[in-house]
Amino acid sequence: MLREIKLFIIVNVDWFFLSHRLPIAKAAQDAGYDVTIVTANTGKLGEIERQGLKVIDAPFSRSGTSLISELGTFRFLYKLFKRGKPDLVHLVTIKPNIYGSLAATFFKRIKVINAISGMGYNFSEGRKGVLQRFIRMLMKIAYKREQVNFIFQNKADQADFINMGLTDLKHCIRIKGSGVDLDEFKFYAAEETDVDDKVTFVFPARMLYDKGVATLVDAARVLKDRLKGKAKILLAGALDPGNKTGVPENELLAMQEPGYIEWIGFQKGMRTVLKNCQVVVLPTYYREGVPKALIEACAIGRPIITTDMPGCKECVSDGFNGYLVKQKNVDDLAEKMLWLFNDAAMRKQMGVNSRKIAEENFSIRSVVDSTLNLYADVLNS
Image 1 (cartoon, rainbow, N blue to C red):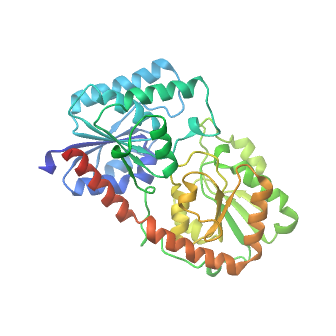
Image 2: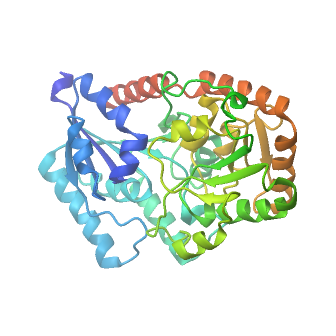
Image 3: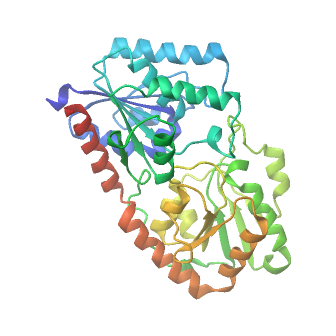
């Protein structure tokens, strides 16, 4: 019977699907689901097809607010559901969540799972403008059906949705992030990889102001007299000009100081980058789900400095495997960086503790099994 079940996994962009949802799609296909990936093409649709998955190019614009464009996205999904007749749609990120859920209201047979991978730009920084109020209104319309269910990555996002009247507890499940292959991301003692006698701090994220890149650079400058020549700060992530808080390339280049603060761009092999560092730093104030970069840092066995934010707290227990710092607080961040720079024994023990957290919480096998079990429960409800 499962071979007759049509599953659409709908994600805003192709690279996010590849980095965060590919194992789930392949496992569902292996379990007998007829799987189709619906996502915007940024040049990686071919990679999805080479995984043996069907793929449809979708007109998603991550930061667009044109009414005509947004109506076009909704119309595309409505026509897709009418023509494709999926039994189950798994919607990932906010625009697919809202427009996919709205389109599904016209088809009683379609069951919906919304994966809430953080609240994103519109719910970061306490934004409460006209756009945010309009988004909340659309959410209340889109999510009112009994057939709409949710995967949350952290407690705070789930509580926010319930408090806003968007869902209730019986339609929610929590799965901590997108998981990590613990065999691929093996534990490496950080000091064994200190190849150039410098303590390396890595910022593993897109170059967004909301991810805290400027806060980190300011903290590094505060510490310059103490750390330059003894430490380096690597910014390991791509530009994201499609995001409203993306750092322009010229500003990012101006932040660099050769041999101390360096932007190394997108790294396909993040495992190697994490293996060759001693500390991971993500001073984000973006409403994360559970940041995959921090999950991977835990698996490799690295102490982590991040903000006291929903999602980040799922990865870091303050003082156990790293430190939670105040948002946008340069002095607090600089202090914690200095603590870890000066204490190799602490770095080592916190790295061991990070691996324990990964083994207990972030196995990809556990994430896949929980998701497929949810598919079955929703279809049978």
